[in-house]
Amino acid sequence: MFSPSARWQDVQIKGYAVVPSFLDAPEISGLIAAFEKAREIPRQNPNFMGHLLHKNRLKPFRNKLLAAARAASSSTQVYDRLGMGIYYATKLYLKWHLKADCLWHTDSTIHYVDPNYLNFWIPLVKPDRQRSGLQVVGFDALEARHPDLAHSLRGQGSTRVIQRDGSTIFRDTARRTTIAIADPNLLEGLAQTPALGPGDCLVMRNDVLHRTQDDETDRVAISFRVFGSTTVVSRQALMDMGSAKFNNMARVRPPFARRFAAFQIAGCDQMSNVLYDALYEEMTKREYNLQLARGATELDDTDFEQLIYELAQEYRDGAFRGG
Image (tube, rainbow, N blue to C red; front, side, top):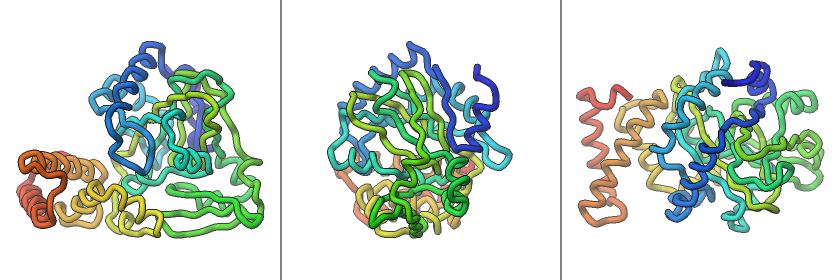
């Protein structure tokens, strides 16, 4: 199914690899049709402009994506859980978001929840192979130029990069660290821009710095995220934050309230992301059903705490352990 293993080794060496013709024409057409339906649904997360692919539509791609993820895994990090699909389209970006997306960064909101995953970024509509793609900075190039910086960024996420006062500044919004390098064009000198057409795949680890190349064409892409079932999720890591992370969470308070509640339900400070997601999804389902029953858009604090208590009781009685 896939080309020689050296391509997948690039995911460990560079942090990314290019896989031509990853999706075929019928798969591309189906995803474009799903995108046209998804864009009619109001976005649930104001932190990004992407629209989610419905979970039921992930199933046809599961075997292909997991086979690729296994090939890209290492002895210390195995990617084996297909989590989500997110659409990104240049024509849907608001001006403020496009400006942010065209700055060097690693993704934030998903990293807060799960710190290790692969991003399978695949254009579906792309009029020009040379435009409106993604620019990336490989760890091999970064290590050759600034090994200490590469060491600090490897395995991390939620990084924002700004150029100011003759320096390139790296801000980690989760760990609240800042690194400044006295070179305003550091990343431009190291960047690569893979030429991609519809169906081609840029697979990259979540710690790879990237940015949108431009918004000059109407490009639509799907981003599949594959996680690792052995990854441990920590309450402390979720709670540790600076102002940027706090603002991201505040904009989507209910989902993050459920994320924090998962630790309360399980009565522990860390757990596998499989159990974490199972508790979160059960909490989401129960809360939604209560909202429907009561005609409310959000539960009050008393009802929310009662729901946590009931789920904690069920967990102690053995429920959700399969997660």
